[in-house]
Length: 161
Image (tube, rainbow, N blue to C red; front, side, top):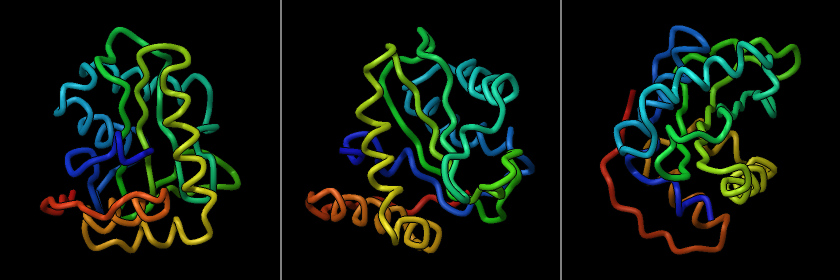
């Protein structure tokens, strides 16, 4: 379940990002602060989109930043950031981005279940509106728990960017 990875400390709401790279830095910093990844992993995520293009914008308004599995990743992890003002990532059909996930995997296959869980949530009809309109981190965690059939037991203070 995605809530095995997302928690009060890996979600931040209504962040201000100057551009695509800044948005990725914000999402990556959440993982660095938890010691899930080392700081240079953020640069690798940014370099990946520079090298490979905006394929990480997987749905209208939603991007999925990541880099190749690396020793810079200490724990398979994911963060979620909503942006106060959407930013362009360079995708002709799905820009601008308001919701950004950052994924960090230690090995080539270990993080695939996280990707699957995120994909299943994104396919939900109300996902984008629920996430972008959430007033608190708890609201997002409760939503994800309910969509995955888990319990709504979050208790954390909201994190705004």
